[in-house]
Length: 345
Image 1 (spheres, one colour):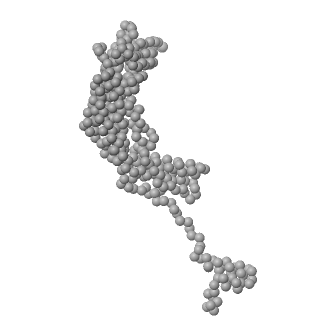
Image 2 (cartoon, helix red, strand yellow; image 1 turned 45 degrees about the vertical axis):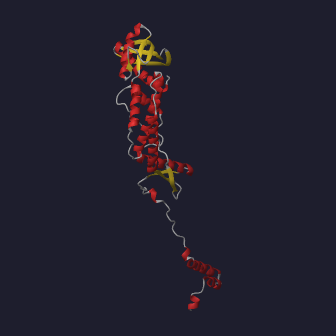
Image 3 (spheres, helix red, strand yellow; image 1 turned 90 degrees about the vertical axis):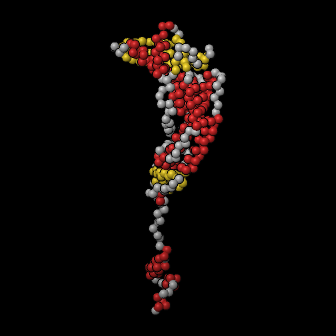
């Protein structure tokens, strides 16, 4: 009996003669024979970083996700971008947008205008070196995930090296004392551009959660030299007609309020201007429209020219004209800084 009870599965199938019995017997035998090969529940391969952000003393991570709306590859790319943005948010920086750098001048001055203009022209430092370390797509193919990684310590070291190289260039920079004022300004502006680049690298260093590098004494001396030269620029103003003497005085006062040095004596540059006024009175409100054409002269040679049109209104005629001239001066302040930085209008 024991030998018959433990016959092999093959023998059991061979002994079955009735088709129905054979079929039932086969099912039972196969169930018994294949018990060890039964289908197991699928293993969840979802990576741990989806729910638990990795941590490191020198790495920064970001996790992003995106829904699959019909294009899985597009969803993966969207998840990668989401991960980069999540990483950048931890550092309080942006991937592509500009960051604002504080002006070095605390009050209005020609240096302030120049710094502001150079800051707008020198590219900001963007987060670089972000890598997509891992990706995952949900079992139902509906959601894509991405893990972005950034070596903050390595980036900080590279930034420090860049700053020290700029310090060497700035310390070695020489502004020639002789030559025309335009030539000296060109050198001072080139020096200021290096300083602005250093400021932006240093600002980026703080965003990387590293200590900023202080200005070496040699670099601070060069900065003071460039600022002093830029702030020393003087302008004289000459109107095209004696009738515009009052306009000249208002313009001089407005430019002075912008931190631009205006003198009645010998100056580095002469500002010669013509101005056309249109005064209107509508329903008790005075409107003043001024169109000015201004030429920057140096040693009798034209260096740049500007054409500006402004409009102001007031209940009083003189106030409307004064407000128009103030607007005109504000524009000229920016234009003169453009001249100083680029050497042209």
